[in-house]
Amino acid sequence: MKIYSNIIAVLIVSCISISPALAVIYLQSNYGQPIQFVEAPAKLAHDFVATTLGNGGSIKIGNPKNMPLGGFGEQYLATHYLSISTIGGKYSDISYVYDQIYREQYAHPTADPIIMVQPGYNMFGGWKVDIEWVEPTYVKKLSGKAGQVEIKL
Image 1 (cartoon, rainbow, N blue to C red):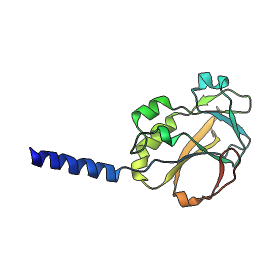
Image 2: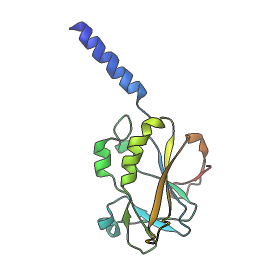
Image 3: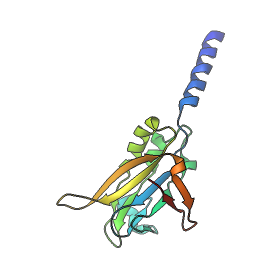
Image 4: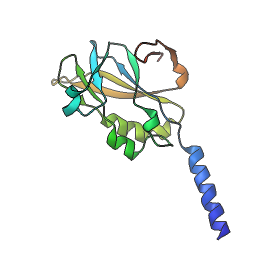
């Protein structure tokens, strides 16, 4: 019985030590004009105060304190939303990026994800959303304005 409890303890410690650190998530606009975002479902987005992000601007989003140890988890993903729009436009839900971050974080244990928003390049317009992983040392300064940061890529 003692051997089994020792094996279980070793497995738990091993799993904790290989879990990635909590990621700091950034949103960056490369849309060409200012965008707005809210951390809410698109259908409720107009009920929230939106944050405006200028072209080329980056901002820290999310609340890592709400994430379980070991990074994102299903509970966090189920309750966290991100919706974006042009100024005064209709909101689009891009919350699926959190699922992508959750899947990719183990391949980037020391990096932070940047959600890159660009115009869609198809006949319907819309959004092109990519995740770029950067080491925290790439974040070079905090501007002090609404959490905006300058990111060196």
